[in-house]
Every structure is written in C-alpha cells, then in structure tokens.
Length: 126
Picture 1 (cartoon, helix red, strand yellow):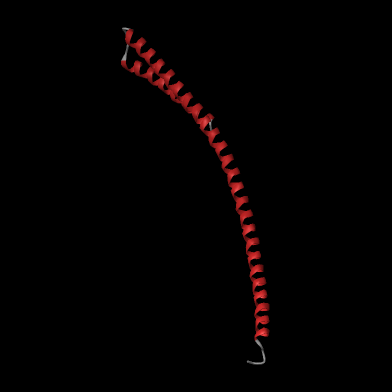
Picture 2 (cartoon, rainbow, N blue to C red):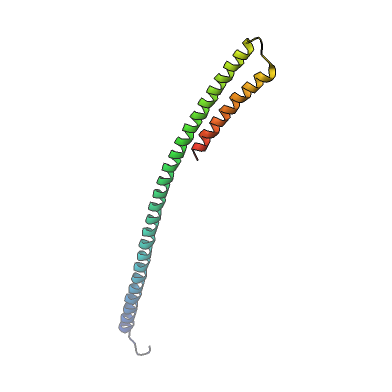
C-alpha cells in the first residue's frame, strides 16, 4: 500500500467515524432544537386560538340571549296585537252600526301599532 499499514488505516477510519458521529450528533441536536422551537410556536398558537374561541363563544352566547329576548318580545307583541284585533273585531261585529271601512281602519291601526312596537324592539337590539 502507499506506506500505510492496516493499523494506520484503521486509526484513520476510527477518527473519521468519530468526526462523522460528532457531525451527525450536532445535526440531530440542531434538528431537535428546531423541533422544540416549532413545538413552542404551535403551543402558543393553539393557546391563542383557544382564547379567541373562548371569547367568541361568550359573544355568541350574549348574542343568542339578546335574540331570545327579542323573539320573546316579538311573540308578546303578536299576542297582544291578536288580542286587540279580536277585541276590536268582536266589538265592531257586535255593534249594529258597523261600517266596513271603519272596521278595517281600526284593524289597520291596531296592526300598525303592533308593527311599530315590533320595530322598536328590533331597533333596541342594534
């Protein structure tokens, strides 16, 4: 051989193996540090997303409660208007001097007041 014996060649291979092992270890250490940094970033992003969703759920619950209150108010307005219309209808029908256009104008005024009250309930939620 070129002046190298098998012992020298074995020593060179061992030194080369050690350096390759060290290089591979440093590379793996760098990869693990990058992975740890990415994991920290992912944990932080998940935490922020959970907090954002938590606040969004609170807003959704408040909105749903307000909508439920408005819906209940609208039902009450409808029930009140129906009772008023029934009372007007009965009183107009039972009176002998009931005139058609007068009857409809009274019903229209009751309906208009119910609609106006419903609109006020809707506007109060904005």
